[in-house]
Amino acid sequence: MKNKIYLWENNVPYFNPDFNQDPPSITEYFLENGKKNGCVLVIPGGGYGFVCIDHEGDAICRYLNDNGISAAYLNYRIAPYKHPVMEEDARRAIRLLRYNADKWGIDPEKIGTMGFSAGGHLTCMTALRFDYGRKNGDEIDAVSSRPDTSAPCYAVASLNPEITHMGTLQNLLGEDPNENMIEMLSSENIVRDDTPPIFLWHTAEDTAVNPECSLRFASSLIKAKIPCELHIFPYGGHGLGRAENQPLADQWMPLYVKWFKYHASDSNITLFDAR
Image (cartoon, rainbow, N blue to C red; front, side):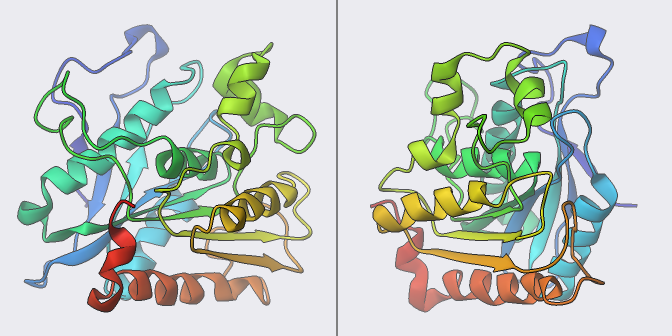
């Protein structure tokens, strides 16, 4: 049984007991090999209405472990919680991994995020709306929340109503979302010059989350000269997870592992530095 680690021991921000949700946590899959390993925070999807733990959490973490990468999946809060609660959970999880890096056998400069669908949106936000430490919090809050790499998978990368998944948008911002908030939380609009390297994939047949979400985000990354890799596989619908039984799309995890290890190699460590 894998260990569950709560993000806050007490005083959980925005916590509402009336919502009947557990406090946010990570479930750890840390390698015990005596090394400082790269680590990926995995963020399952579910439209901000539920969390797909099995095939977008546990299965992904186990594959990463099998390929020499430590991992943890995020048990984050969902609707009726609204923005910015989910972001607070994700940023805190990155800080927690970095703060405890020595204890957990993690290289603090090789911490990535990976997320699926709505969890992909949250992954995008970790890559674009991070900080380098907060002064008005505890010792963990003082640690940077910037991921060193990020991998949004068939992600709701944009909240633009023309292309977004409306259920995700409404669960995050409510039935009548503010236009300024939609723009501020759409990845293609907020790429910054210290955005970490990004790995994106989608399928052309995805009718739940328009692949245009990934295309627009990738275009903005390229314009900003942020290292990125984008794969649009021709077949397969939404929510594929590892895509083990989907021809062509089943390549994505081996491609990701190669990409992550390249960016985590000592010869490319400069890519992890803020520019």
